[in-house]
Image 1: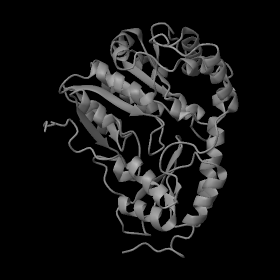
Image 2: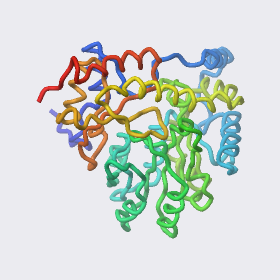
Image 3: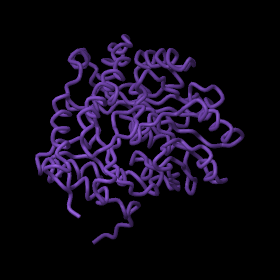
Image 4: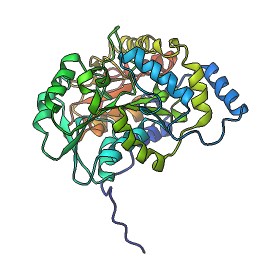
Length: 389
């Protein structure tokens, strides 16, 4: 039998697969995995169908259809107050996770260090390992989650090649502030470090606050690469379509990887989105729509032992069960699924160094009736249902 020298000897089945299967097995309401259970806009489906009928079924140009990139460049100009060349500075990708890996592979060489805040989206670590880099998790402080640039700076070494910043942040829901952008610039000025900006929840920021992208801060632009997702924007995660924005010298290197690990992206979807996004209202109303769902779940749980952490953006919220149970987060999440019938994600499963603080993550991008049913079950905590010792 062939011997396999695994690059990922410690990688098990993902927590999302594990908890989703458990939810199915126990007929639980799944607030764990990050996808919506309500339908997407039928108009967008019609536009994809029309594009397929018109013959957009073969390879698209490697960087994306120009008509689509023109729409994305106009969007960036309106939102970032920065001009980007759609020909040389925007590339369409098969999803944001692919885009993140592509950017990492383009710049990270063997033994280069990549820093990111912990907890984090679970693809960062293995993507860095896959290209021979060294992932460095910078733990956030509990309970005051924030982008601590001073703590990040203390981890920078001559081997640091990239820093990943996710805003709005999954899973804490915090957002990058202007002071933090300035602090990042002060730390990175004069270095060769690339700033990779995971901005898939850019249009899910609450309470009227703006999204601040590092690309919108001129001093950071030359080193910043921004990754976006339409799956989160338009509730079409199965279409796996996203894009990258970066200055031309960076994009030149990114495309060298892109043309060899994906080459191109779903043709008909690009044409459909190019038409659909000409109306900015198709995505500008997303924050208000999801804020109502955030508030619906919080209101439903106000009489439960679960206490919400503040959330500024994304469609996830952390809830604390401290004072209610001494169970570890993973055990508590399994118990909630089996005994209460509601599935969440234990925060510790998204951490490397952050630790176990009795926090569970719920996704509130669900139908109102789904959230109300979940809240109804969770309100029984401490009344009809008491966790085991």
